[in-house]
Image 1 (cartoon, rainbow, N blue to C red):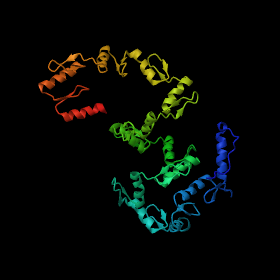
Image 2: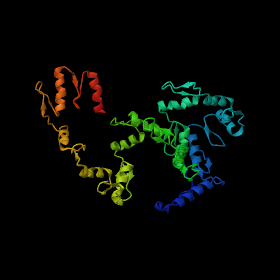
Image 3: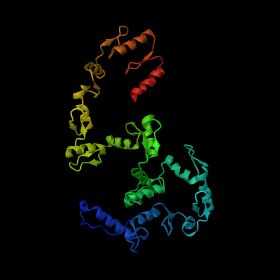
Image 4: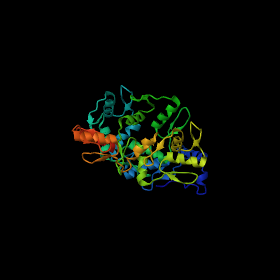
Length: 397
């Protein structure tokens, strides 16, 4: 691809201000009004005013769509399809939907559109049985199951299952933000991001959790939150099989395996796997201590340090192995048997030994025939092996 005029190599990128960026954006925009077309295709020689148009044009060469619309530069595989497409630009949309007044150039398109209003879903997915009102929607949906991603970004080669998603993705490269907040003028690349942002101004939170009454601005946020109550963990690590309720949490977890540390400290250049850890680390340089002891007012930079400090006031005694806290010394001593080999309680019948007296007492019921199966972790006894197995799964997670 020809990227047009070369940038000024003498400009220090560290000094390239927001004002400079705005000037660059304005310069790019002004090409729309001028006859200048600095971006050219190396394959067919076509020229364009803006870089995004050139990138869109390149799909013609990579997807086998040589018939190009002279109005919007969209490519097609056959001349007949292009001719039909041209009606969008040249023919009145004489077929009008009686429900929403949307216009169509062909009666067949109007007929397909009407399924949106009738909720009739004639096209059923053979894999998951999900229904669709139009065949093209089913065809697009099938890519979820096949993994097909036919729409490829001409800049970074990332694939997408839908052309609309590729178009949205292109804004990453063009920095286009077509959606502007009418209140504060903040710009967004996605309409959904603008809608989410508007809740900042309206304070609207229409989605309520039916279990704990927590409210959310977005339906998807409520859906994600519900996993707290259901325990659902649909996102599984492909390396260690650990499950997560949120996709972003899995993404962060993967850095444990890859060693990736994308968040860097601006002061000492130390890398971190999570943004939250970097934020905590920055307090080393800023001296910020936001966690204050309610008893003696001593300040701490980390929440865990405050938690450890509180034991001075509460008298809690932490386990040196797992960190669990105990108020009484005797409780800590009993707990430590879980980590040691100490088993002071022995069975007079079969010579088995146990960490705790209650475990021995429950074990004795096995000899008396009261229960037949016992959990080796919690010492709970069960009359049926199947019930024991379900119980053991609790410990195994």
